[in-house]
Amino acid sequence: MPISLSVRAPGGSLETPLLVIALAPGESMPASIASIDAGLGGAIGRSLSRRDFRGGRDEVLHLSGGEKGVLRVLLVGLGKGDDRATSLRRAATLAARRANGMGVGSLTFHAESLGAREVEAVAVGLDMGAWIFLETKTLPPEDERREPLREATILAGGADAKQGLDAGLAFAEGYAIARRLSMMPGNLCTPDYLADTGREIAARHGMKATVLGRAEMEAEGMGSFLCVAQGTPQEPRLIALEYRKGGDAAPIVLVGKGLCFDTGGISIKPAQGMEWMKFDMCGGAGVLGAMETIARLGLNVNVVGLVGATTNMPSGTAVKPGDVVRASNGKYIEIINTDAEGRLVLADVLVYAQRFKPSAVIDAATLTGACVIALGHTATGVMGSDEALVRDVIAAGKRAGEPGWELPLWEDYKSLIKSEVADIKNSGGRPAGTITAALFLQEFAEGYPWVHLDIAGTAYSESDLGTIPAGPTGVPVGMFVELVRGRAS
Image 1 (cartoon, one colour):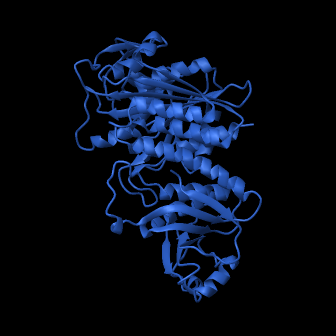
Image 2 (image 1 turned 45 degrees about the vertical axis):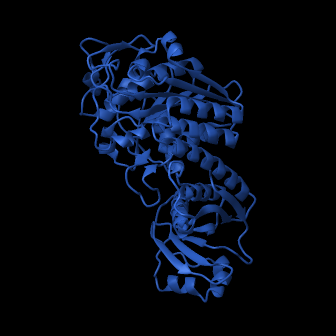
Image 3 (image 1 turned 180 degrees about the vertical axis):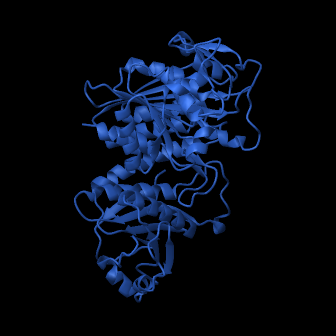
């Protein structure tokens, strides 16, 4: 659960186990902190004048406080970034992680001139940094435990501070859902579990929920989706959540890949590192988290969230390389590699999206290792059929602190996925692997503006990133929500 967050105006006496002060390079000690610094014997001012702390990105300096009032001080650098809100979010995330390690239980966060957007960013960062997944771990003995960060106060004045806090809390709830689902092991976070989570979100916010199983998908002719599911006894699920607060306007449709575990199927993956494939459902988790946040924000817009959920397993009934299947739009697909399964699931989900007559469709998937090679773990790959929508999505990612980078969908690349026995094949091999995967999806994203997000490098990390521990990052919740918020009336 997200931590308890509140705002209060700066000034006056302060009682806190930890005061976090976020500063940019060259920034002097805030005047509002002067009385607190005096009570600490001028420790903050001396540290700044001596340049013990210079405000660099991710720079941290821990100072001991007094026996009462402010017990500890943590100076955190904002760096030289031109987007202050994004810098504040990063600094708040780092501060909350440090607070968890200290066992302080609560903190107070200060930075100068916090408007609504900055308060929102700080709130999101504090919650992201405090997040820990403990559901499948035995707690250490009580005398060895450190108290986790449970509450935080943001020092901010002005009438819009509460507005920013409420928005930050909405984002925090969505990120928490996405990260929790992503972190859960595949034997617990099954397609049925994702479907139940979707139903809970819908019931909580008055949305319409529809869940299709194997029989319903067979009736829809979803041979592409179902070929991935034919190797597992688990019931595949296509989850649809409809949020309707935009009158008669055409909805925005968010689509997520929900492979609860991906072995690669008959084209089985190497054993080394396969446990990370529980994260192959981060796109679907992102859709569910985004729908939670959109509903909490109360945006006047129509949004449909679609998740295609199954597992990709090798068995006597699993789809084989060389097989040909028929998608729900009638196109025949030659299976070259059963580990290129996410695009097979998304193909039928993208066709299903047509029935909502959408104004735009954005899908997100941990789709290709090639995207990690191209962009690393910093940027999400962005490709689409509509240049204006691509620009909107990239701008939304920038606002959310989830940067994206456009890759080309040129006709020249289509020859790589041309099949001799079918209309298209599901893999073009190693060259331009991210692009050919998107071009495959484009064959099924017909009749609406469409953008594909390859989040293979950004949805989770196999190492500690400093601000974020190894595990899920929450991407693409922010990008989804910022796009929708930008189009709300």
